[in-house]
Image (cartoon, rainbow, N blue to C red; front, side, top):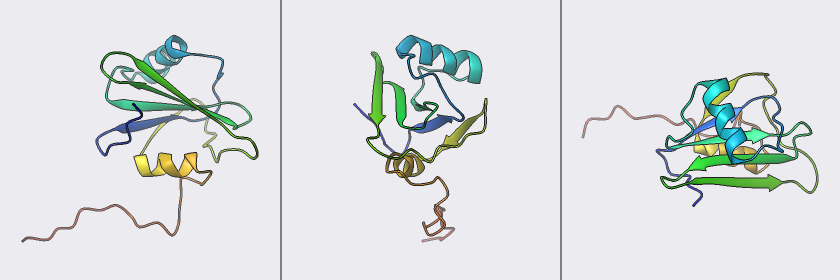
Length: 117
């Protein structure tokens, strides 16, 4: 199932991806282009050229899940740096899927307090 738990790493394939690719093509892209393990506890997120379709590839231990979201109107605020993979938080992925930018100026920064109890 779609796993947005805190331990899940999320990698964005910046720029555009041919979204005609399916499980094997996207897994090969993760392995060869980005030197990452497609079978790891991670989500790999891809966006097409007109930024209206997002695909998310995720391994659950027994097989791949492929989640697809296509917008009716508008487009995603997708980072367009070519040939780059960017690690983001699950919160930032949630923002992208809601049509927001990765850089939310008013969002609270995640931090770990150095408080001794």
